Image (cartoon, rainbow, N blue to C red; front, side):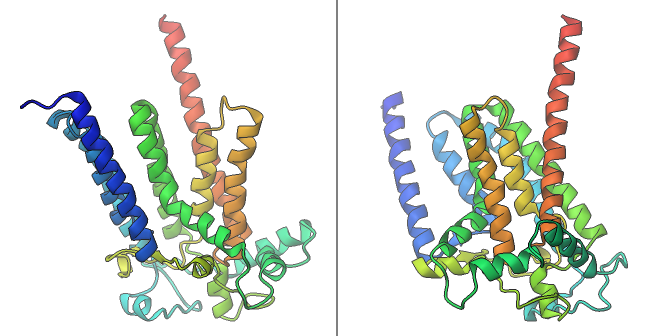
Length: 329
């Protein structure tokens, strides 16, 4: 018996419900995934359900749309690890010296530049100290985890989920904008890993462990909020290898960059209140990264600049294309 459209629709919604329940169970029992291989594997399963009943051509088109982007982003993940100046043994034991360290190109690890830059920024912002130190002293002064630590952990981990979620929604609703979004994601990833190679830089927590960070102890608090609600973040089966770990991938902050790019991508043509909400995301991400000791303010600013340049390039290309079409017309 040939299946009708409503029967396939019933199957799709049933499987989507099961998928949502499965995702909720996975997060509750295993944790929030942060590795791209696992996340995009889940994306392909989800989109396979979405096109179920629409023929092999629809499924194959979905694969053609997604696989090239995923291949480039996976290559980015692996190349980021190869840009690390530390050996596999050092990564395994978390032994990260900061003196006399060079990457494979012979470029030394930058440790003092971001400290000088953030001391200058903190002084001109009226903090009188490093922004990281100021945020941690004011918002995480004790040893206990404050209630808003959950929000900090959620904002930090959203970096791993917002990009694919935006891509999924755009693929379903607007394929042209999906391709624009994924191209912008790839450009930012390539620019980020190129900078990691050419300018390896120690983040605040690493400078503190090396004894050169001015001020008090720098804690890494980005994931501790999940302890309050019984969750944690997981990196998948392959994320423990050297090829995915680069503790000096600090300049620029791609967490800030992607949060800024999300806001910029949806900014134009929105009412003022929507723009306020969009702006809150990169600001919240920037706060979470300072709170967690993951980034200096200077590399957050650099990440935002990278994203804004890419958004500006996208908008300029739209204007140039419109101008050419008007001339042809």
